[in-house]
Amino acid sequence: DNVETIFAVNTTKSVLGEINDYIELNGDVQAKTKVDVYPDVMGKLTNIYVKVGQYVNKDDVIAEVDPSKPGMTYSISPVKAPISGTVVEIPGRIGATVTPQIPLVKIGLLNRIEIVAFISEKFISKIKYGLPVLIRFEAYPELLFKGYISEISPVVDPQSRMMEISISLSENDPRIKSGMFAKLKIITEKKSSIIKTPIECVVKRYGESFVFVIKDNNQVEKRKVILGI
Image (cartoon, rainbow, N blue to C red; front, side, top):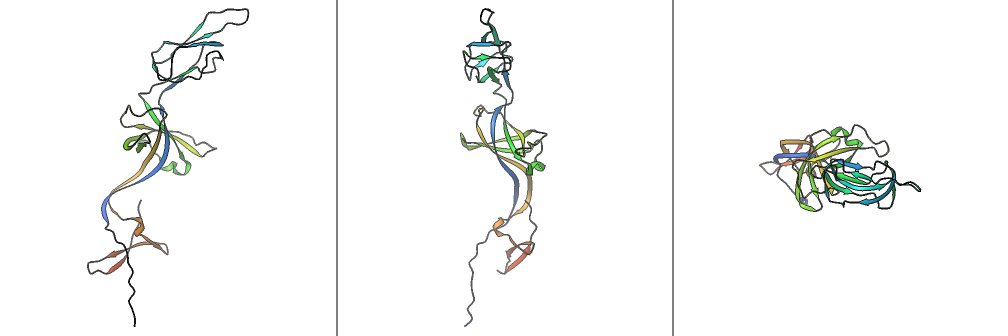
């Protein structure tokens, strides 16, 4: 006897809605403004009056350098803060010989931060100023922050084939600290009021894409589709 073969299949409903195309990247939070503080003279670093995380005002004395040499004694040279901000790093070490080319302290404006990321050359054509960015931090995995692309480097690194971009937060948040790791989702394209169908439902054969649609009479119709995002 001829026995009809029955195959079990899964079905899903197509719906109207919004869909986004995006690029996923990782980035690092940095102070948007960071200034290296250099001594005016060469000599021995005798004192450092600040600590990492300390807020300083412009022209505060943050360190002292002794430019004296064997047989010659000179006045202590003070090192002053060029801007008001928070000390983020202290490369200088007491007792070390320093020069005007070596930074002693780094001061940043932590109320203005940005996220720096590097994007592959193949995605450069999709990157534009102002593109929305969804941001997550490992410190707050349940929270979603919003931002936008604020700066785009005009050059591509010839070694890594990567381009640097900067993302600014839409709203400043004191919970976000310089040095934190960020997971980024850059929205490069957005479509609304379109038919959304899981890609698993699409069959590709002989250069065509199609889906099988269940009609009112429980028959199945093969229907050609044009893929979007």
